[in-house]
Length: 196
Image 1 (cartoon, rainbow, N blue to C red):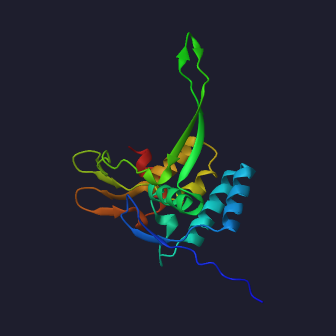
Image 2: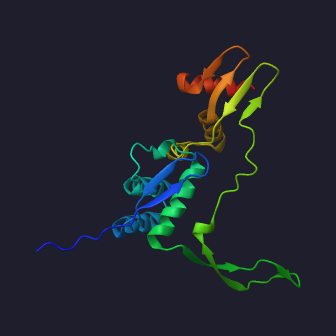
Image 3: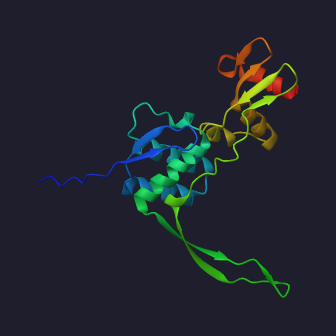
């Protein structure tokens, strides 16, 4: 005799930066177990790989490339996925660090946070075109989620920063021609950035 199947609810979400509309299902118990085990491992690559896998598993929107989404959108998606999967309210305990009579207070405060109320502040998004001089400008895009996978492989923070900047270049305009990063060699983009 076959056991009954449980229908999972389906949710719609508009991502704050790309404005893409996605459809997803909550993560299952086995996926939650995998996330918890990854968190216990304390290994960044294992955690990122498991988060990426859960996002892919739960996404019902055809053709959505999670790795190509801006990190802000992926974080917002994951917060909403977590809320729909295990509950909207997160209970936290914070220690007061205010100084009272020259000593930290140390009082513990219980705080409940409804994660569905978290919204990124999009009011101060800066201009994505940087004017280098009177001819040359660079158009940037927000870093994509895929960049996190490579971030752990760099020996220095400086190398990681240059890679992130290079990955964020959409195009370079010299007053006459557009040079699209997608059509250029990564080393050429980094060389351009280093020449600034």
